[in-house]
Structures are given as structure tokens and as C-alpha cells.
Image 1: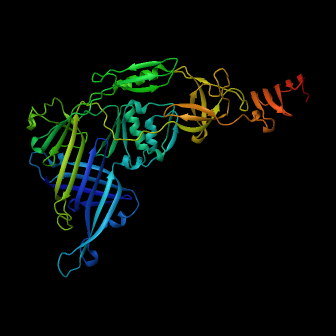
Image 2: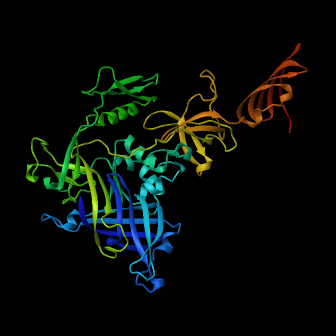
Image 3: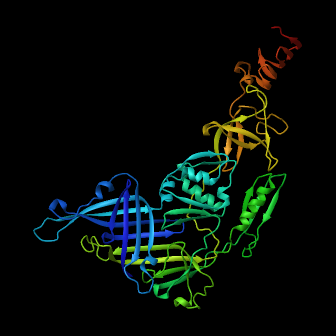
Length: 544
């Protein structure tokens, strides 16, 4: 289509704003989706001041800087064939510059006069979260915080969010993530993974440049009647139907469970399993509830191709009606409810690509392609960008905490969770400001018939998932337990302190095995020693 468009374009570099007249724009591409935008814009600037001309290019000095650049663009038709006001049909979005280029060219207006220098600028951009969070790869641990707190701590000053979802504002005992660039999962991927995994909604308000995280899609707002005259084609799309039944499995031997979730459209024998290992029945129930809430049957979508610039708002999130009122055939699409815009794509090229015509004006003629995709208003399926799931677990060193005895006593301790009745170690993580996390009180130090709990200040390696942790192994030996390698000994050292303990040592002396059991309680000692041809039992109390 050919359209006369009024364009407002602003490019800020390092906080300095440059307003580009719409008539200078020579092309743009926009892909606006419910969760963000990607696009590019090309424009020209003249600079003939060195020849006594009236044009000066004030942009160049800032444009070549490495400072952060921001783009805002709004587009509306120069005229409409309906009673709709042009401002009602305006499209606006904004983002952060990713790449940019500038090319210098010359043109000659009049023979025998100096050539006029002009520059052709081009920038590509995406919404702020994509631009910044996709370069953010932190490793962080939070305790007694909500995921909202985490986002607020990492969002930066260019991103604004609102929250309307109890899941994201609920305090968690632990939140951990380690976003390794080698795994290509960034903070942006983490947020999208979190929202998708918990069946939430992440949206971008293109006009305001803000984000929201919600528990359900926004159904507010008035639906505008989409006119048949706006369209060149309309296609109904029917997405692939899931043919599996979700199934939640719990492998814990104390509470093994298999929960099959119904799907009336499933093919025989097809399942999609979620495997858990938890002794907590509520964890299983919560996961079953979550998987049951995921919509399985996708609703129809509609793809629109426009023959003219849309005369009603069609930014993502806008609601439109498709009915006989707008001139549509009821046989083609019998809509019983409104549709929500989920994607808008625009490709435009100026009818005159040169530097002179429309230069400095607010509008220009363009060859324009415009398409949109809609979903039914009641569609509950989440629309989110593709993302790389974060990897878990991550491994951190920690020290076991025990509140029993003096600080120097080697004691063990555990706490019983008030909600789950599960016994847990407390482990201190020095790397993250000595924050304390919980890990299952399980036999990590050997076989189940050997009761040797992890003791105070013992260095351990902890495997951390997003909200849970497990001690996977010990890192060092107790100082008093180590023996010299000359005797090739094995030593079991039990007790609270170096003066209150029991020691069982087996080693070799003159290449002969020797077993020694020594009980010490301050000055009182009992020694049992077994060696070649000799057994010693000695009870004494030392003086002093």
C-alpha cells in the first residue's frame, strides 16, 4: 500500500535528545509483540553549513559515541477515510539502540555549486529489557525475598515494571541463580522462564515503555470495530493441538505418587511427565494444580493483512471486534467475542529515497506493508518470547551451622520446618554475605547405618536449585582426624572438642597393624591398644 505518514522520531544518546523530523525518515521496520519490540529506522540529515547553507547536522558528534542510545517513534496516518481521528490510530513504541551506522553521501542541487553533504543514519533497537537483561549474567543468592525483590534489584534504571501476581510477590526462603554466559541463559531468560514455568503473563506497554508481570491477561478496555475496508486479507489460523496428557510423578519412596491430568484431545498413550522427588505432599499437590491450570486447547487466531493504515488502535494488547457491523461476512468468521492484538508488523520505505524531498517536514509518502495477528480475548495461553532455560544446580561452598554448645564445640544441629515437619541443616554461604540456607538433614556423610551428622563449621559443597539446596559432599577433614601418611592410618575422631572426644585409630607401626581406642575427657583418659602379641588397657587421670 502507499500511505502518507506523520512520524515523530527521537534519538537520545548519552541523555542528549535529538528530534528527527518525520520527513527525514527513509524507512522503518517494526515488529511489535505483546512482550516487546524489535525494529530499525533509517533517516537522513543534511550538512551544508561549511558552504554557507542553512542545514547543520548536530547529531553526528553524539551518534558516534559509545553512550547508551534510546529511540522513540510514533506513526499515524496523514489522513483517514473514516471519521476516526488520526490520533486514535497512532502507533508508538520505544527501545534501546543495539547497532547503528552512518554513511556520508553528496548530492548537487545546482550545477557549478558546491555539492551538499548528507548522512544516511540507521539504528536497530529492541525494548529495554531485551537490550539490557540479555547482557546481564549474574550469580546471586537471596534469602527471605520475593522474586519481585530480585527483579527490582537487577532491573536497572531504564526498565520500569508493575506487578499484579501473588506468585511473584510471595516471599521465598531461598532464590538462587547462576547465569553463565557459556550457557546463553541471561537474566532476561530467567525472568521469562520464571513467568512461563508458573503460568504468568509478561507484557510491554509500547506507548508507555513499561512492563507488567501479572497472573492473568488484561481483559479491560473497549474493543474497537475493525472495518473490512481496512483489510486486504484475513486468515483464520488453528494452532497445533496438544495430544498428550500431563502427568506429575513423585519418586519419593515414602509418598510415591502418579497424577494423570485429563486432556480430552489426547491421543492414546501419549503423556508429558513432570518428575518430582519430594517428601512434602503439598509440593506435589501444588505442581498438579499448576499443570492442570495450563490451557491445553489453543483457540483460533486471526491474521490480518491491511490495505491501508489501520483506522483503529492495533498496538499489541488492543481489543478489536470483527463482525458484520464492520462489514465482515458472518460465514467467514462468526466472532462471538472480541480479539486481542498479539503481534503487529510494519515494513515501510519512503517513496522518494533521496535527501531533498520532504526534508524537514513532519510527514512523507511511504510504501507500507502492515500485518497483525490476533487471539480471542478469552485465550488463556501465555504469549512469551523464546528463551533459554537457566541451568540448575549451581555449586557453592558453605559452612554448616550449629547453635548447640560453645562456638569452639564441634556439634551438630538441625531445625524442623514448621510447615513441612522436615528436618534440615542450616548452611552458611560466605560468598553471599554469610546468608543462611536450608538443606535436607540426610545421610550425606556415608551409609544410612552410620550416623555421622555434619558438624559445626564443616566445609561442604552445596548444590543449589532455584528455591532448594542439597549438601552433596564434604570438602575437608576435621583437623584432629588427619594422620600422617607414614603410618597409612585410618582415623575416626568423634566428639565436641580436642579435650572431650573419642578417637579410634588404625595404622601401621613397623609394618604391623595397630588399633588404638582413646577416650579423653579433660584430664581423664581411657586407652585400649591392640598390637602384635600385646593388648593394653590403661585408665588414668593426668595431673596439672
